[in-house]
Image (cartoon, rainbow, N blue to C red; front, top):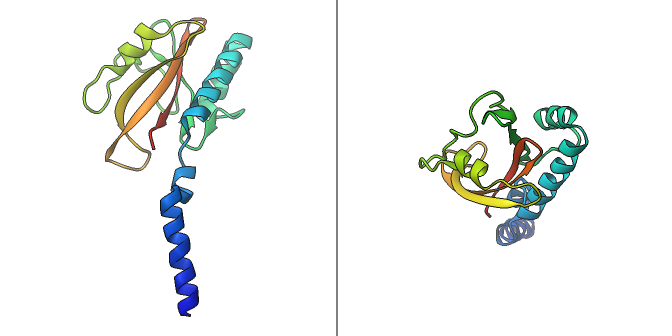
Length: 149
């Protein structure tokens, strides 16, 4: 019995030291960047189909806590899990930083930019640092954000 308890504790400690299962629930910077690059290709191929896939999370556009969001030329979300039709330009982080304005100001076709801000992880109230990569694809400003580990 003591041997099983010791093995269990050792496994728990190893998970804590390596990030364990908790880290697997969150996307990485590389995964966020790759998803955004895939999204840009999809928008350029067929914007309507791409936006539908982003909104449904189909075709790999939802993984772990990563998802694609986009805003149109009017400043409103065209793709997001829950904010379609609402103003992306007016979006502020939980400390009042105007991140939506930053997305639109810095977005350029063919270049990835990033904005850091404070946002709660899914299911949490505590604020964590989040970084969103974003770019312009046609008339869309699209991004994918990840939480810093």
